[in-house]
Structures are given as C-alpha cells and as structure tokens.
Amino acid sequence: MDKTLPGPDGRPRCRWCASAPEFPHYHDTEWGFPVADDRRLFEKLCLEGFQSGLSWRTILAKRENFRVAFHGFAIDAVAGFGSADVERLLADAGIVRHRGKIEAAINNARRAQDLIAAEGSLAAYFWRHEPPPDEHGPPQSASTSATSVRLSKDLLKRGWKFVGPTTLFAFMQAMGLINDHAQGCVIRAEAAKARAGFRVPGR
Image 1 (cartoon, rainbow, N blue to C red):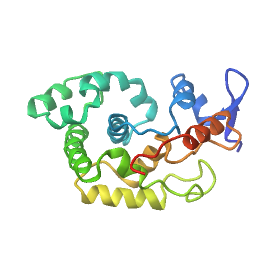
Image 2: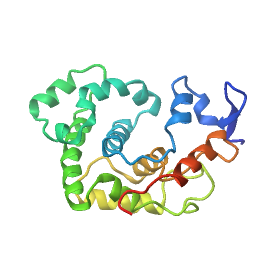
Image 3: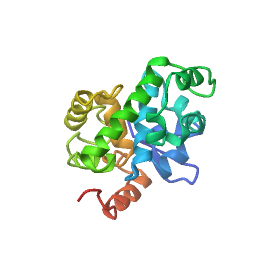
Image 4: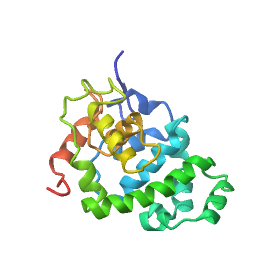
C-alpha cells in the first residue's frame, strides 16, 4: 500500500495524517523534526505514557488541557506534585484520568531530575542514543527497534515508568531522532533538512 496521500495542497504526505483533522498540522510542523528542549522532550514522554492503550488523536486533542494541568510540563514543577495534585488531576475531565499514568508522570519528573543531574540534560541523554538511519528498515515499517529496546531497559532500570520499547520508538519518531516520514512525503525532506542543521546537544 502507498504510504502517502495528497494533502490539502495536493502534495503527498504520510497517509496517517489524513485520518484526523488534528493530524496534518502536527505532521507538517512537529512530527519528525529534531527537538533539544528538555521540557518538550519530557512532555512527549509523558503524553506517550498517557497514550498507552489509547489513540494519539485522543491525546493530541487534549494536549493543551494536559499542559495546563501539568504546569506546562515544567520538570521541577511536576516533580514537586504531591497527593493533592494527584487528586486534582483525577478530577480533571480535560485530561486522561488514570491514577497509574498520573503517578507515573510525577515519578518520571523526579527521575528526569536525576537524569539531568547525571547527564547534563534530557536532550544530551536521548541524542546520545540517536540510532543509525537504517536501523529499523524502511519508513513506517516498524514499531520498535534495537535502540528503543535499549533505551526502555535503561530508563526502567533508572526507575522510569510507562517507557516500553514501543513508547520509546514513537517518542524517537516524534522528536526527530528518527525521520520516519514516508518516502515521497513532502515533509520528509524538510525534516531531513532540519536534522542536518540541528546542533546535537552534548556534542
């Protein structure tokens, strides 16, 4: 099956981004473009955790609500959340009200603080694990990779939660560690250009 479809401007884009009205802008401006900002990296890890068992459309539609509820995903702020915050979040109909995922996000903020202390930044840590371009085969042909498995094991060992190999692979796709735009997608070249001009943190 062709992995592209014509977008609103007639140019080909990844087929998946035509499946929901929220997707084209996200696909064209965020997905696959390299990110070095720790807050954005942490946010994406949290949202991928909340997506577990759900669709990305559900999470993307609620993203602004999540940002308000989690204080913009400022790592130190979320790390300071206590039991009253958990109850506040469980009562917030604008987000996914799942105690385990909420508590995991708070735990992961604390583990992120530890990782930043050890590695200098989340960005330096994750970009140190940037996989070779051909590790997972043709674009959109895999949901895990050797790197996502290694990353998952390392983060779990460090005490993180909801960071399985599939979650980490989706994180790497979204944050530009992998350019998984389909061959022929007009945005693939734009993402590649952004990566070529990207200063890798810690190098």
